Each structure stands twice: as C-alpha cells, then as structure tokens.
Length: 490
Image 1 (cartoon, rainbow, N blue to C red):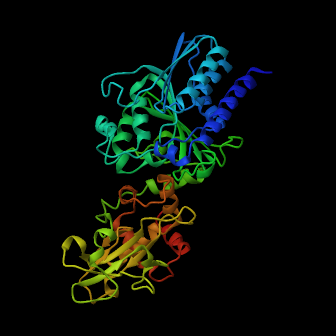
Image 2: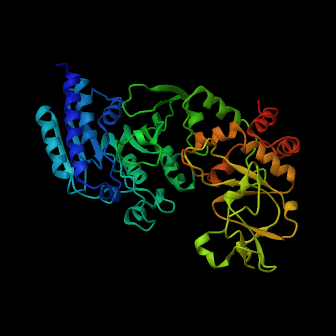
Image 3: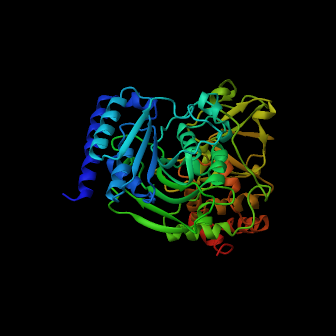
C-alpha cells in the first residue's frame, strides 16, 4: 500500500474512534464547551496548507484544544508523507477529562508508528497558562479547531487578554491570538474559525493585533454552513485560515471555496492582498472575479456615510426594557409611532400595519424618542435564505405630519436625512445589487451592522441627492436602483 494511503488510514481510524466518542456524549453537553470535532477530510486539508521547512532538525507543533488529536495526527502524517527525517515534538492542550484517554491512546499509537515523534499533553487552561503578553514564541507550526464559546467580558480569559478584547469575547479568537503569541518568527498557523472576526467593532482590537504581527496567505470558505462539521448545527459561516508570523505582506492571497467538506471540488481565486485586507483592517472574502470587480467599483467611491454626515444608527427601543410604555392605540399627546422592521415594505415605510400590536410608545423621555424627520430605515436582521441582506425603506416626515417625534425598535437601523432626496438617494445605493453584494462579501452573518455600513465607501452627498431626485420618478425596484446607480458608478 502506498505511504499516502497508510497515513490516511491512520487518520480515518482516529476519526472513527472520535465519532464513537461523539455519539456517546450528548450534543448539549459538548455545546456547553464549544466542542465541535474536526472531520478527517478537513484535518487532512488543513495539514496540507503548511509549507514545512524540511531542513529543520526539530519541528515543534502546537495543537491547543486538541480533542481526540485528529489535527495533530494529520500534521504528523503530512510530514511523514513528505519524508521528513527530523524530530517532531508535539504539544497538545486539552482539559476535557472525558476525551483525554482517547487523545493519549491516539498519540501513543502514532508515536509507535513513527519512531521520531514525541508528544506531551498539558491538562491545563491553554490561555491562562501562557506568559501573556511577555515573549513566549515556542512553536514552528500551530494547528487548531478552537472552542466556539462566548464568554463574559469579566471572565478570567477575557481579563487576562484584555488587550485584544472588546465587550464579551468568544474563546475562538482568544485561542487564535494566543497562538500568534506562541508562534515563532516566520512560523505558520492554520485554524478553522467562524467568519465573524473579519469585520465589526468587537474584533477590532484582535484584527489590529493580528495584522501588526502576521500576514494572511490562504483562506478556504465553506459555502454551506451545514457541511463543515458533520451532524452538527453550526449557525456561523466557517472558514479555514492560514497565517504566517511576518509583517511582510504577500502580493496575493489564495482564496479557495467548496460547497462540501470533502474538498473534491475546490474553486480558487488569487486576490491582491490589499483588496482582501483593507486599510481599516476589515477582511473582504471574495470567491470570484465578479466579487473582485464589486470591491474595486465600490472602493473607488470618495466618501463614507460618516464623512457625508449621514451616519447610520441603531433603533433605540428594546421591547422588554420598555414594555410598560408600549401601547396598541394612541392615548394622548405623549403617544408616538413606534416603527419595527415589519413596517418596511416595498421600499417605503408603512404604518400602522394590520394585526401588528404595540405600534405606539407613550413617553416623554428624550432618550426614547427621536425627531420626526426624513429617514432611511434598514432591517438589522434577515434570514440566511433571503435573497437580499440589505433591506430598506424610505420614511418621510411629511407622511406623518401629526407627530413631532417617533421611535424605532432596535431591530432596525436608521439614517437621518436632511431632505427626501437624500433618503431616496441612500435607498438607491443600499437597495442596489452592487452594494448588497459588497456587504455580503464584508459580512457573512445575517445581521446588518451599522459600524460596518458607516465604513463602506459611498458617493459624495451631491451625487446621493441627484440619484434620489431621479428614483422618485420610478418604481422603487432593485432593477431601477441599479440603472440609476450605474450612471454614477461605472
């Protein structure tokens, strides 16, 4: 049997053992620890991304959160496939007492099979046991499938790594940041992680730390959420990423994608580094030449919503905190319209709507009311099945002349405009195919984040007004928005 098949057989054997273990542990129990085990095909692919220096006499590997060890074994198998003759020193961190015996058994067998491999299992909290932020670069290559678990902002791990945290962090990017910390200069790290780190304020400190120390070389995107971890319900879009601990940026980043986790059919695109990683440290994950064209077209625009003085904000009413103030009917002069995402219909804002309860708020508190002005309302949440991520509607103060103030539920975003033309012009932009595609490249979630929208390149305000004047002569369709936008963006 060829050596490649022998190595693959050992990985598949380990995968079978892991599957048996997984079936014996209730999914809810594993979910508490953010525990999703890596399929064998994914482990093999991740190990293939390393560009090993086979001239090294000793290669030191780290697998933090090792589980049953399938990633470690995939790396060792890959090195043996490449006929590496030096010593392999493997360090695994794992705290789950249930799986450690399986991890130890798997590693013992791989060491017997390959005589020049040694390992140690550290049964300690990976993050809290490191010398952060003091220099501690120990490893040549790091591989990992870190736990996907949100923790409190006052959790020990969050306080220990406060330099990369904002708000309540997720353990996966703390593991990743600590991996960067443990990586030697010019060392390589391959992780499988959610896509959420690529944009937004919560990950801003982490992205700054990442790009101050490392460069991205490879990204693999899974085009379907349910194909990554077999039999698991994973709502996040997931990706494999390879970084090198060097601030020398490659000219290109290789971005691959697949619809399944068997990696039999992979689409590949090579993208300029500066297109993928923006000056603001946002990461744009493109998968086609069309998407590269989209980025180039939008990035040529001279302004942003902030520089145009048209900032997007989030609606101010949280239902359960203000429930006693919500009303089904108008009661007195202190009762005002309350707008929800359901009020956005066919490009306009409709109020009231039949069958909807609590469409009024009765209050005099300034913090719960906003001026009855012209706005563009944008839904904050859409389902993954919906065709468009950006769904918006024009609100005109003149349609509701009996009210001095209104209010908005926090499941919509809004942009306050000085004129109807501004509101309609912003509608043309955000209702266009171009900008919807751009936002999907920027953000893989179903939530529309005002921070991200505010950073998107936009036309100058006079152009926005001109587009707004024109669309008022037509139906508010995506097709008409595209036609008008193309007069200004070519």
